[in-house]
Image (cartoon, rainbow, N blue to C red; front, side, top):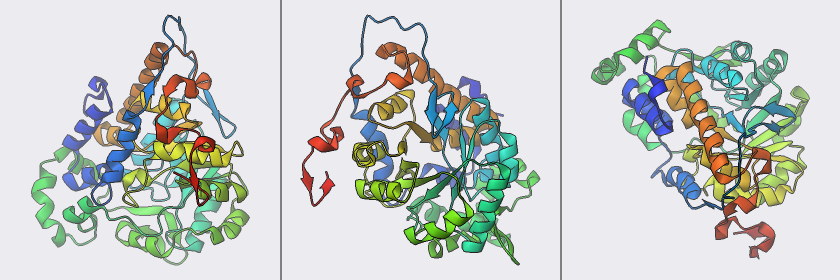
Amino acid sequence: MSNVARAVNIADLRLMAQRRLPKPIFDYVDGGAEDEVTLRENRRAFEEVTFRPRHGVAVPEVDLRVRVLGQDLALPVLLAPVGYCRMFHPKGEVAAARAAGQAGTAYVLSTASGHRLEDVKAATRGPAWFQLYLTGGREAATDALTRARAAGFSVLVITIDTYVIGMRERDHHNRTSVLLGDNPFAKIPYLPGILSHPGWLVDFLLDGGVHTLPNIVTPGVGPMKLRDVGSLIRTSFTWDDLGWIREVWPGPIVFKGVLTGEDARRAVDAGAVGVVVSNHGGRQLESSPATLRALPEVVAAVNGRAEVLLDGGIRRGTDVIKARCLGASAVLIGRAYAYGLGAAGEAGVARAIEILKADLLRNLKLLGCSSVSALDRTYVNTPAWATPAAERVMTAGRAF
């Protein structure tokens, strides 16, 4: 196991994961769509926001606690849904959920999990939310939602930005689908690269080698295999699906993939208790806006009727602070903890959370702010794109 205790930042965990994982597996989690412009812009947007600290202020203690959708969390960082985590480490989603619970925060489980949702829920002592894809069709989704309710998942997160799968060119260059397929002969060209990562290979083989998706179960067919996940294209969410979903899931619903005021208002009008400003980590529509850039428009459109969360590009505690200052209740991290998982399993995920928590404590003290709940726009120098929507030029009903 890598000595993740030596990781100073998320970038260190990324390098550890890169050393342990075969290139196709690492590139799957690390890469974005097409030229990866949106992937880079997610980070650059945070760099454009600077702080307005209160110096000469003693802050002996800092309170990181937040309340999100009625649930008390120890810090404003949730673990986002990341598919196929079992490829990174055999314990996958179970390890990530356990680390989240031990840190006092929530874990959001992807439909495309390599572990049964019941096992994931049992592993965490914190809140667990379930993220829904309609992969496998309505029957498979109904089965998953029924099981998620029975297992105790408290919030449903519906991803709305995957009508087709983005062109993730690294995966195509690496022919990742072939590596994960059932044909052993097709994998022969990958042997040199795989054999150069013996730790991952041993874990993968001991775990069974080829995985199914146990939360996508079609009656009469059984769990979906990784090779069949392309059916996502034919069974993506539209607003018309909300009616039957509500019949199966009467609990709170959050929509993930919101980037405009129009979609934010539609989600709230449909009864959403929250929205996640997300561009799928730069993995779907290339040239989508950076999520931090989209955040002010969404916050203004929601106008307090629902909570607004944000994901995409979070690598530092200062990123979390900036998102809070611009109106997000909390953030979700994906790659940040996936790197830790790939580096060292549960210990790596715990280290990723620990790094961000330490960042938050240190930088809030340096900022002269004693609690996350006290953060607002007065703590940042606001770029032109982040000014309140009411003060921005409006054209055709849309802020820009």
